[in-house]
Image 1 (tube, rainbow, N blue to C red):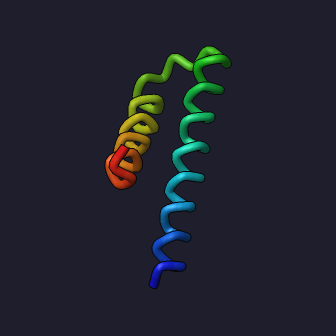
Image 2: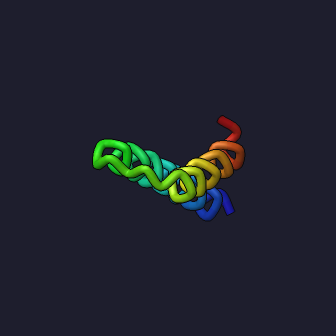
Length: 53
């Protein structure tokens, strides 16, 4: 059971990193689509909550 839980946490951390990098890359590329950015931010916030961060 511990292995499955650890794998789930690692996947959440990987997703968090990917979303954070995507947000930053979109900003650097001049993305002005607030809907897309806000959806990514909301997903990032959900993951942070799941990880208790």
